[in-house]
Length: 218
Image (cartoon, rainbow, N blue to C red):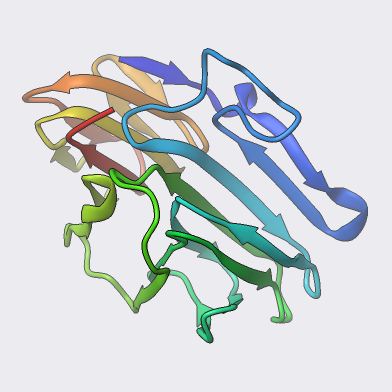
């Protein structure tokens, strides 16, 4: 298990424009050849957007983009004609495939916090696609077959335990709360990268929300 702390993340964004970002992997000008990916995950970005702030239209290709809103509302528009508002509890997936452009904004009255994770597809190219699942139930897995991955969202009460998937690669991101994993205490923004996971479990020290990626290949 490789634990990465919140304070180790690369700082980005544009604070003057109301955008703050923290990157868990090599990203943009923060190039780290030893931190390019884990399993299929190539980015795990924590984003904060002030009301009225956002990312203007920009391109993506050959990437599975999964977004989880923590607080506030995210407005999404893309060049394939999809437009939606993503709220806490929703899972949004944009499969950029051979190429797509999109806009992400905080058009709501409150600050927006979201986690966005990028996964490398097993096969590049193809046609872009979009999906949003509103109010995904706790422990309901969300499959991203294009990347050979499965997302598990867990919301735990204090003292509750949950098993991690048995898989070649498991990525754990703590959205909120405090947990204990194999003797290590993790808090908001902390992450664990586990190889060959088998019979692992998490203990919540406080009410917690976790994003768990189960992946077959790296």
